[in-house]
Image (cartoon, rainbow, N blue to C red; front, side, top):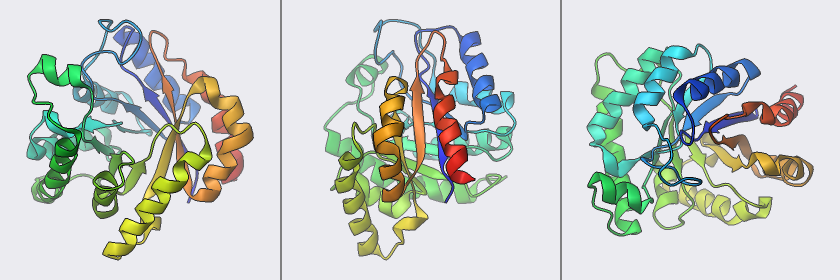
Length: 263
């Protein structure tokens, strides 16, 4: 499986025109996928700084781009009816010509829930709700007319061993594990995911594994961690970029490393 590089553009702390330029630059530089996230307020920096909504932004990116995949890393299961999520994803998939990746997670940021009127509850409850909604989303994707352009990849994020990883094993085409500090941080989650796949008779190789990398840690990552993660089976590496500039050019070394490996 080829190595892939993603750019997660945190939709915060900047103006939309600069964010739009960063999406164009991501495509021109050769990133495989551009992600945003599904929050309502900045996660760091000025807590009341500028911030843009996930799904409407993704629809704009679908129209703006031509080749790069797009998706949320990740959409919060709690905020929307699962049938609606499937319909929105299918629609953006058509706008993009079949480049949408449906990234999903259980949700975790309490302020988002409180200020927008969602019930926060316990983490386990939120994650179990994601598990209950996955068959509904999959069923709706199969009923929609027109259907998605391709068999839409479903990405699930998280490393929880008892709730999240069984959901990954059963439903995910792609898995975003974490932003690990060291390669060995992924050893236990990978082993647990393999165990859950074995229990249901699924080949874990059917699932693409991904991790995140902080741009400021890219040099030591390439020197010490990257090759080990590839040997472990990780094939997608996503850099996170913040506003107001979203300087995706900082990922050139990672893109060059990908190209060398894939060659």
